[in-house]
Image (cartoon, rainbow, N blue to C red; front, side, top):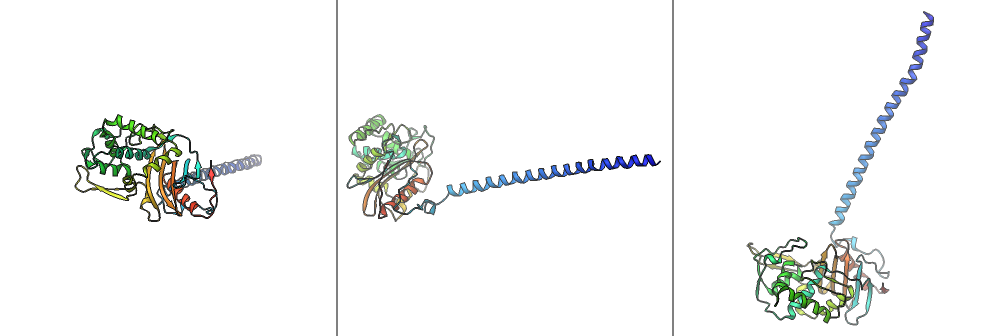
Amino acid sequence: MRPQLLLLCIALTLAVPSLSAEAVEKNSKKHISSTSKHKVSSRKIIRTLRADRKYQLQNVNYNRSVFQDSSDGGSLLQLASSKALIVNQATGETLYAKSIDLPTPIASVTKLMTAMVVLDAHLPMNETLAISEADIDTLKGTGSRLRLGTELTRAELLQLALMASENRAASALGRNYPGGLTAFIAAMNAKAIMLGMTHSYFVDPTGLNSANVSTAQDLVKMVRAAYQYPDIRQVTTTASYEAPVHGLRSPVHFVNTNILVRNSDWLIGLSKTGFINEAGRCLVMQAEIAGQSLIIVLLDSYGKYSRIGDAQRIRKWIESSNLPRHLG
């Protein structure tokens, strides 16, 4: 019996380490699995935080400090717009230039040319025009608050085309030009040539077509010319306007697409915004800053609010005592 007991004891001794190792391995696997779960959970939290941060930035009010330049006023001006030009309206002096001779789509900035062509034709501004199916945007598929069948005067359509950037209003203005849309586009390009806009070309009155192109340098010429029209100055700096729309009992409230116009701290004499994907965010203005009448052109700004941020940075830069010129 003793030899048998001895063998049994030896067998049990050998088995215990094996069982212990198996238990350790199982516990280790459980720990690894638990750790992996925690890592996945952390990644989800990070993604959520990032998404929340992105949401907050996208919905930030333009008055918040995100648009404040942290540098002192005398530093070199840094703009988010890929093409920009600032010119003293009275002297023609260039204060800032960035990629000013590169042709680029200009989106609804086009409507300044549309307005000049309409006004140059001396058409009756109290004539009633109707929004029709021909004014529907079939190129980009954008919507409009001007329903089909809406009847407005030429003056009201000009108001909405410039102030609220209503594409159907601009289309109706071009369509009702003597000779139709073809003649209107020809007049736009003839006006551009007359103004010396040698790198500009227009194919429609709305700016929805990316073939409407210009340069920052040419657009300074266009803004300077448009500023000579009192109607354009008044309309583009109006904060809001109510217009009757077909099928609705109450007038529809339209607001200026440039929020700076609604800011009493700014003295703006002319303004027009623009956006399509190919053009980015655009803004052209005539504004008085620190006693200077300036023409400001900002093109191809990527972020939704960056053109407004650029305008705020320009104002701070101009108001500072030291103005290093940037000509690039």
